[in-house]
Image (tube, rainbow, N blue to C red; front, side, top):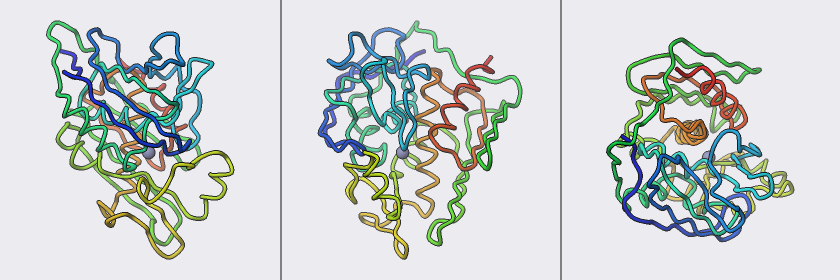
Length: 275
Ligand SMILES: [Zn+2]
């Protein structure tokens, strides 16, 4: 049975990379239409699917070939993490609000709207019959058939305040809300100038990101988890995998040093190998 939301829900704020104000309204979807963006910039709803990915620099962007929606992964992560299949996402700008840098405000808005089961609508799922692997340099992914949906993610960054963080996680809506959705996006002070020069992180601040300096971690109200960085990478991975358009089923996924470009390639590989 497929799941959508019961009523519309709106969230407003500035985008992380473009720094512009935007309003997102989540709308119920009657049909088996997956996640779609609706905007005056698009003639028809733009499916949030792998074949629409138009960029993966510090975020995942989708495009119809003319107009782009930037940084879709946190919002999609919230929808997929809660088990939603079909959702129309109306947006009046080119990037969803950064909110607090996590997926929690999106998840909270979706839960407030209420989840709605759609009897009679078949739910296809992404399942594997055999192990799948992908490696590029020191980045690696694997997936194998399992019971339930579980992850092991390793984030490893050569910085005295970060180092190696490892998180293991079993996906249920409750676990997602408590253990993944609150993890915030982060950046390093040594990168900020270069990011801004590249037109990225223009809306970034301590209101919507954790900033890692040479000697201290700057996080509003402190870190939410000791391994918040690895958890945020898992949040991103779930959002990027949602672009496969199928909910995960009976699969164990491991990822070491994941990033958006590799996430999208791995999602493509999983789609090809899916039963
Ligand atoms: Zn992120």
